Length: 106
Image (cartoon, rainbow, N blue to C red; front, side):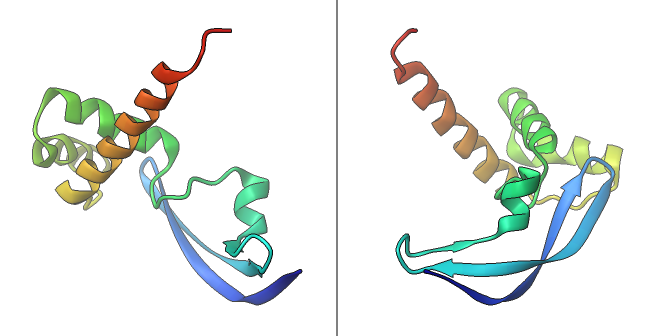
């Protein structure tokens, strides 16, 4: 059973702008998790930053420290992304790389 539990606002950074929108929130008792149908339908990232922006942050962080890596992106796009965000994004991306390399070849 899925129960509507309200509506929440979401901010997503897409390149040079931030998109803010409201979406419905549901809770699945069987799965014991919150579900956002709009996010699923639109393939939205779970994080606040678009997939491309996460990729750029990750790439920048491989060549320099976290503060410098977001400093360049902040300067180009006028954002205020903190170095802790770069660290979190880089750690998440590195986990995905580990999973990729552990997969069996097809």
